[in-house]
Length: 364
Ligand SMILES: C[S@@+](CC[C@H](N)C(=O)[O-])C[C@H]1O[C@@H](n2cnc3c(N)ncnc32)[C@H](O)[C@@H]1O
Image 1 (cartoon, rainbow, N blue to C red):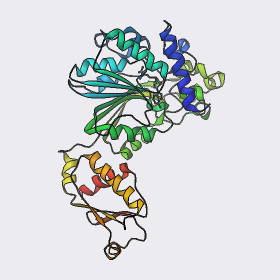
Image 2 (cartoon, rainbow, N blue to C red):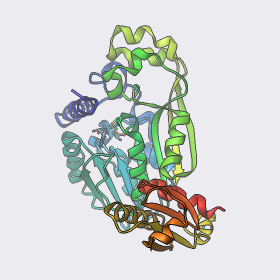
Image 3 (cartoon, rainbow, N blue to C red):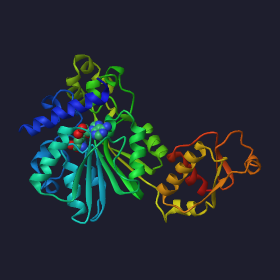
Image 4 (cartoon, rainbow, N blue to C red):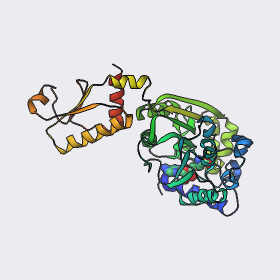
């Protein structure tokens, strides 16, 4: 079974427990084997006033490690996406905050979690919510459609976190906020823990080191990246939540002392009209060098998506005359030139990289 299947199975079992009248319950010995041992009881995380009116089924199913809805400073009318929405607690909380003029999507890959979330929605009769089936690595929503991406103890579970962050960036509108609670590492943890599928599903083994999280966010195009620890786990806590992974894992708990934390992760997609867009206005021309081959068309498509993704206006010119192309002294086509500077030759940079090039070029 690959990691994704292990994760799906564990969270399916957790959802079924709640659907059958039990609790997903997230902490220590009560946890279904291998689940979210870093998660805390919902009453430790959420203010009682906030959860008033939220379906009980969503509260008991809570498997998060923080309250991203408090972090996100949601405003009435906003559109929110919760990555890995589980039983839906953060979706319901967000729906209260954005009000009837706003909309909240919950995205989850596990059928049983979606069934639980939809049952909770039906019982609560909340209309400004939609639960979507899908993977956070491939978000089934259009570019530039979301004001705030939230998530609670989920991104660490992904096997391709860079892709998740690029997808979050893609669906966010310019100036959109990324406001996530997650498990983050602040030191090397023993290989016994890193290699345990149980602990991957338990939100430990897959967690990123803090500097890596920051660099992945920046590589995806985010700015104003910040990681704020909300709880650092000491050896005693670690010993407790490692129990599901067996005696060997427990025996190395001391080596993980202070190296695993719950944290708020914040970032922003560059805005139009702010400092970044001043940079963008400085871009006069994007040129695609090539004689019209299929690869040139692919590059053109990526450039168009990047321009659209940043919401900027830029002139895109195709340079097809060989004598004109040669003036740029590139060895292979297609070539990408921004404001007279060759940025790529003989390859097709992905959309996110082109966005980075455009932002950087605008800063000159
Ligand atoms: C730790 S639970 C958190 C649930 C919820 N955010 C909360 O705070 O209660 C993780 C959830 O993420 C979902 N999940 C994990 N990996 C996913 C992926 N790659 N794509 C979509 N959903 C995923 C699981 O099905 C599960 O519902």
